[in-house]
Amino acid sequence: MVAIGECGLDYYRRRTSPEVQEKALRFQLELAGELSLPLSFHVRDAFPDFWAILYDYPTARGVLHCFTAGPDELRAALDHGLYVALNGIMTFTKEEYQLEAARQLPLDRLLLETDSPYLAPAPVRGRRNDPPMSPPSPTFWPASRRNRGRAGGRHHRQRRAAVQNLILVRRG
Ligand SMILES: [Zn+2]
Image (tube, rainbow, N blue to C red; front, side, top):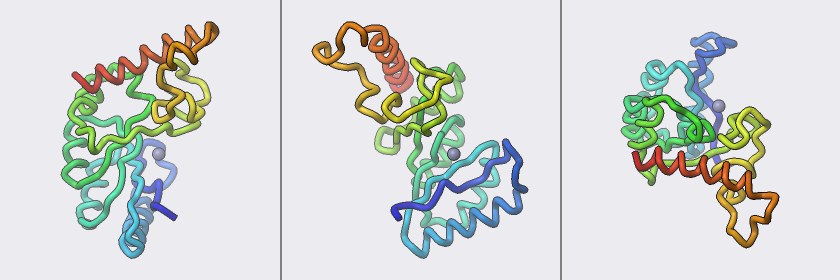
């Protein structure tokens, strides 16, 4: 075992009450503390409650997975020492608050994730997201001219466009 999670709070789907979710999250935070393991956090529509709980565990470390919030939540995550994971959403989003947070995210705190089979990136958005399609995979990145072949030309151009979107997001 290398980490605890995903764990966190999800008020979007409301399948479980906030009280039960908090109880489970605190249990997992305590377990991670006992085992000295990092956590992978999932937080959706629940940041105020999440920060309130997390501040009770100052030694908790880990990654905020599937980050799509804005600069304020980014600042709180960085202040707590968390890594922040971006995924395929960042290849097509036009939400300025998400783009601004991505610009401000320091490279040494940035992780790329697939969230496979969900969140396929721009060239294949809406399809099943297999890891080779996603930014963390070397096969996502534009192939060299030698390896590309003629059939790969269209996909190559689409992927290059998605990668350039990511780079633009990063450069602001
Ligand atoms: Zn999740």
